[in-house]
Length: 182
Image (tube, rainbow, N blue to C red; front, side, top):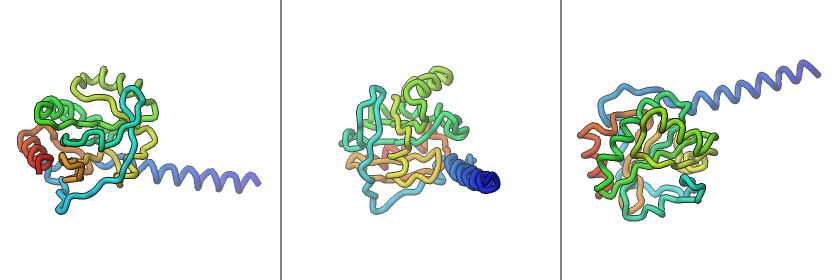
């Protein structure tokens, strides 16, 4: 009996390790936006629920007519942490263009974990958005973190990037503006 418990425990731990290994995508040191996958035709995203800072349920449809940069991230994901300052600067740059940057935290610690992270790292322009069980990430087919979706003003997925990039670089900002407008 003790032997079978040991085997079961090893199998379970192996499954957990395999799952965890897929959660954080490898850091990509590529040219700005070179890994951005653009969709033609645009893709319809599954209806998925995430939460705002007050715990209210939200959906992408709540942002109808607004371009979105939806970043799936977590405080425990080193590549995610690395790109957050650029996403924060992007949010400041596009706020007057009817483009919102929604950084959906996958942290199970919720609002407190994100608020503490924002305070430590000086993030000031991003709101707190939560997907602690990863339901939205799964519904949208994210294979790991960080994953970023560019959603046009009609609510269709225009592009996706798995990994990190310089979101606030002028060529990327121009590309985002063009993608959400179409």
